[in-house]
Image 1 (cartoon, protein in one colour):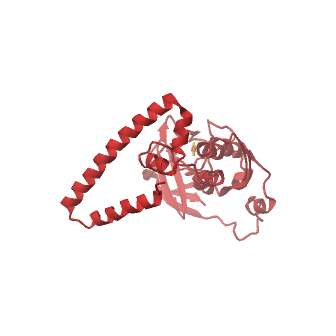
Image 2 (cartoon, rainbow, N blue to C red):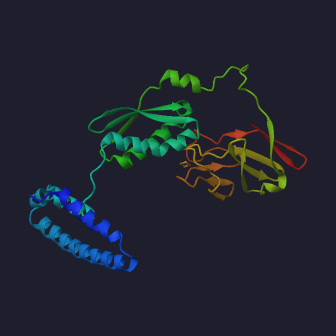
Image 3 (cartoon, rainbow, N blue to C red):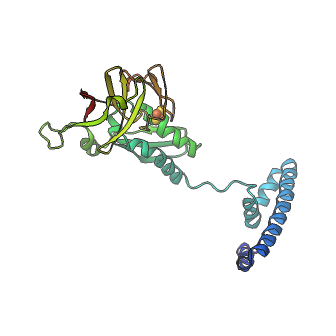
Length: 279
Ligand code: FES
């Protein structure tokens, strides 16, 4: 029986020797290796085609051999093994996390219920946001389905009250955290009329929109998954999020795609030529 490890070690040994050669010799050796590999890949592709037509069970049996599998994998003629389900779910959640975090929210895995169900918990502001159903269905659920096609149900379970309390937004009016400041963010001319200006102020990303002498300010975060809006298409007073196409009326911040949500606005004051925003 041929040992895969020994065969691979032998190849590595020769590759190490070749890597010490000067460039022109190395190119010849690498060229020869590629040509042989191309020949093998073509032969293996034809072999798989014939086996598929004759007998799938014979093909499966052949692929179950570790040497055959390793060579087919090397030539990308079989799919690499999938990571375990739990790992794929975590990868999916990692994908949506930045968007949720930009809204001070997050998501955590609660349970995997084979064969097809996953329970998650939306936490932070996501848990109480009117858009949480959308966040779940279009963000979290979509990402999980992309990575784990076997999962068909993603269920949001009750929120953890401990987590919620710290994020409920019900802060005492006497809390030292409640302070607001008017900050100069731009001059009137810098904000294009019927256009958008994106600014970074005190760690916040904002968009400014001007209609004549009126300037409106929103947080530069889509109400869907929190991705920035400033690169979105802007037409007839409507901005379209470049990520998944949610549309907003810039005059009011209302969302035309999901009427329950809207852009987060900030009070604006004009003094002379300067635009101030209350943060
Ligand atoms: S982040 Fe999804 S539409 Fe904007």
